[in-house]
Image (cartoon, rainbow, N blue to C red):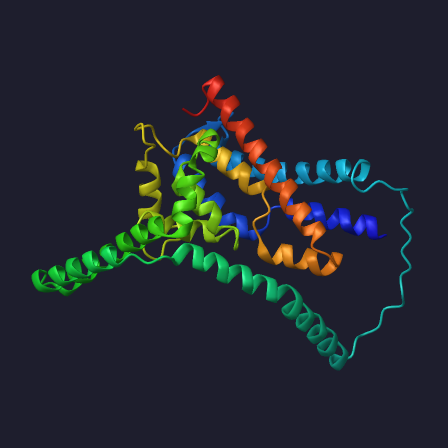
Length: 308
């Protein structure tokens, strides 16, 4: 029924997908890199990672049950499946059906994805700072003039590129928004840098890692970048306390499990539901749920002294 299809569309995005893995891999490598064991058998990182997948399944089932009894009430219809006779398909039919589905996705969902990607790119890239550009141009000229060894020169220039990208991001609209909303991130254990990473992740969850790399001035960062892991381990809040504690790491992963940070998902729900109301509702309730769960984890954990 349409009701069952809507419930599935509105809850399925909480099931952990491959796009969340880079975030989970980075966080577990940063805050659970030691030899800590649970029950003397399992590494703490593996247990936490398994818990995130279990949370995603439990949250999906719970959200479906709540929606079935509130927003999408209705009679439970019996499941009747009529199995047609199976035949080997013609390749021409396979290609035709695939092309029609692909074209419909590109036209309907692809337009939304492209538009939102351009908006996020603009937020992360503008306005430009002439002062930053001039300062780093002078620094590059100094390196070119003073460093003789080609390998050392290339390393210094790459380091300058990363630092310039980080300062430019902080100067951008996204950086300013991150600073503006930092007070709302602090109760979750995050600062403005994590906030900017979360903002970038609304394009796609895995973008969180590369955005953090830009924030910390690390070029071409991914979840396996040792320099990014070290920067996160050494990062501190304004009061000097560590930024990425085990508790803050769990809080961040819980947020990513429950939040709707995927433009293609929003585009597909818009296409399948036939209106903007349901994807907006999905984005809203999942964002509130993610924030509330992350807040609960960090605040309760802080009161109990866990991971500090």
